[in-house]
Structure formats: C-alpha cells, structure tokens
Amino acid sequence: MLILADGLYRNCVVRALVVCLALAPLLSAQNLQLLKTLTVPPEAAVGSVAITQKGDLVAAGCQDGRVRLWAFPSGELRQSFDLQDQKISGVWFSPDGTLLAVGGNRGTVRIWTLPSGKLKAELKAGADVKALAISPDHTLVAVAPAEIPAQLWDLDVGRITADLTPKFAGSSAVAFSPDGQWLASADEDTVIRFYDGHTGASRASAQDILLESFAIVFSADSKSLYAGGADKIISMIDVATGKISRSFPQQQFVVGGMDASRDGRSLVAAYFDANGFTNPAPVLLWDTGSSSIRKTMQQSGFRAIGGGFLADGRLLLANTGEGKLQIWQVR
Image 1 (cartoon, helix red, strand yellow):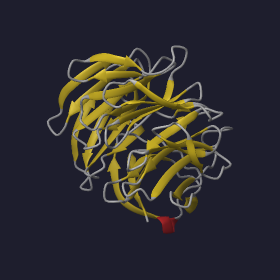
Image 2 (tube, rainbow, N blue to C red):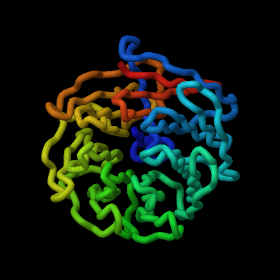
Image 3 (cartoon, helix red, strand yellow):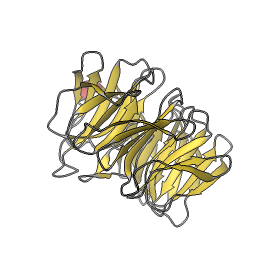
C-alpha cells in the first residue's frame, strides 16, 4: 500500500500498509470513478487509511483516537477500535486482511484479529510508530519507531527478536516480501537493508542511494525491491545482492509512497513537494517493464490519504473531506 512522508522527511500519518499520499492537483475526472462515500463525524477527521488486498475492508485512523472499520463496497460500519489516550499514527492490514494493526504516537502497537475484533497483541515500540509490516504467515511484525532502530517482533510471544538498523538511526519504511523470505528497511542513513524474513538475520544492503528513501515495496516475484525518496528517483534493487539494477527517470518531486501491482507490470508512486507538503504534486502510474509513465493523476484541491493495488489489479485511492471519506477507482 502507498505511504507518504510528511513535510520534508517525515511520514504524513505514519508508515505502511496504509497509505498516505498527498495529491495536490491530482486525478483528472477521466482517470477516476467514485465508488463509495463513507460518513465520518466531523470531529473525527481521518488521518490514515488502509484497504485490504481483497478490497472488502477499509480502515481509517481518526483524530478522535478511534479506528473505524467499514465493509467495502457496502459501506457498512463493522467495528470501531479505541486507541485510548494515544493519537493514531497509522493503520495497516496483514496481506490477507485478517489482522489489523494500529500504531500510536507513544509507541503502542495494537493488533486485532478480524472479523472477531479480538485483540491479538499489544506491543510497546518505545516511540511514535512511523512504519509497520506484518509477515505473510502472521508470525512476525516489523515496527519502525521514530529515530530508534526498527524492531522485529514475534507475535506469538510478544517480544523483540531482532533490532534491524544501526544503533544511531531509525527507519522510514519496512516491508516483507510477498513470499515472506525477505524483510527490507529503508534507513535514515540512506542505506536499504535486507534481512532474512524469518530470523531477521542480515543478508544484503544497497549503499548506492545518496539520499534517504521514504518508500519501499517488493516486486510481485520477491526478487526486486523498489525504493524512492528524497533523490526523486525510483531505484529497482536486486534483493540478493543489494545492487541497483535499474532506475526510473528522475522527477521534480520527492517520492513519498509506492505500491506494486500483483501482476508485476505496474507501480504507483505518490510524490510531494519538499518545499510544502500541501503544494501540488502528482501520483504517477509507472510501467515496470519500460520504466515509463503510463498515467499522471492530478487535480486541483484533491488530497488523497490512502490506497493501493488490489489483488484483482484495480487501483483504489482514498481522499478525505469534512465528515466524509471517499474511495475512488483509478481507471
């Protein structure tokens, strides 16, 4: 799912299998189809959104400290979870949509089992949660707290099994590969690091990226990782060696969030202006084979705060306004 950094080097709501993208002039009418408008209390402004890969559930982290969960596309409000006294920094689904994770600004991570809504785990990460990823087999969760090393947690025992990054830095993004064999982190020292997806053991690193990456996503075959950030370039990295195999053309804006299609043919990237987070910036749909832009989506006044590719290939984007959350399909 797409996730976008806030301001110059920070996540807009956190870091995930949510998506935080700011689309300033974004998404022309011919590129969008409104699928659903969900009602949200005006005082509960939405800060982050996640959509399951099946497209059957939408979760929104709201400023009133609650996570609201809707069935999609019916729009029925299924459940509401309270993070109590913490502000929500992000929401994420597991790849199969049966776990919902919520991060707080004081470092608490709560994970619920769906559809029962039973609390599965509560983790204490120690700082504002910037990014999170759940392994495909549900045994591990990678958490990136602000300015401290990313952590790999065992969900069955509720304890840290490995610290993933150098002791002097944190991570902006974490991701498990679709096959569960790899775990990657985009670290604040500009290095992309690869780990064994089961043990957290270090395997490789990409050290040729000059500026910090804010977004990473594995290819569908788990053999490559796409990384983008402050250098305004999307790099395709060979997972086994850490070497950059290809770079997409540099753009005017910073890469804030990305997601890859399940057929391996497309990559969506949300950009932002480093001089002002709310300034106009596009979302681009890339052809991964040719490294060329298929579609530029931009519309004045539109701000999206979630989205990504579904398993059936559809690309959904969510935007919020006073008292509403809208889900759009990109044609």
